[in-house]
Amino acid sequence: MLPCGLFVVVIMFCFRFATSFAGLAAIGIANDFAAGGMVSLPPLTIAMLSPDTSRCGTRIGLGYTVAALGALFGNPIAGLFRHAQPDGVQQRPSTVQNDFQGVWFFAAACMLVSVFLMLATRFLAVGGTLRRKI
Image 1 (cartoon, rainbow, N blue to C red):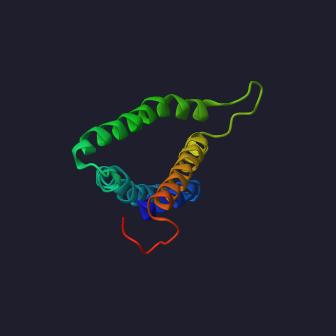
Image 2 (spheres, rainbow, N blue to C red):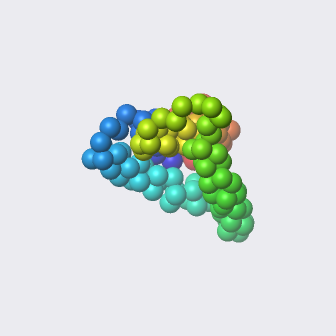
Image 3 (cartoon, rainbow, N blue to C red):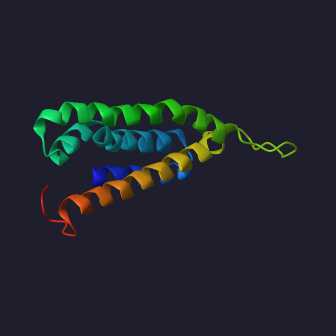
């Protein structure tokens, strides 16, 4: 999950530099492939971190409950970042980069925090070595 998370962070920060539809589509497709790992790997990770296999289902359910809260509150926050424009400020031309720049940076920052939390979890589970399997 860590490589997928880092790849998503890099892609999210690169969204700003897509200047054409083709570039935006290419970055979007790359983001979808990397984010696919972030969606499909949590059950495996939670199962590997659970010492008692009889509680894996409960822990996976709680993990997805926390993820659902992020999905529930993320959209209104994204709308706030998209429309945050002080009164009296000249409106920039409407483009994808201008309209969604705050949303992309917010998403990248949240993903970066999650990567640091994954690193902390790995450190607590196996210590400082990177070559050891959990």
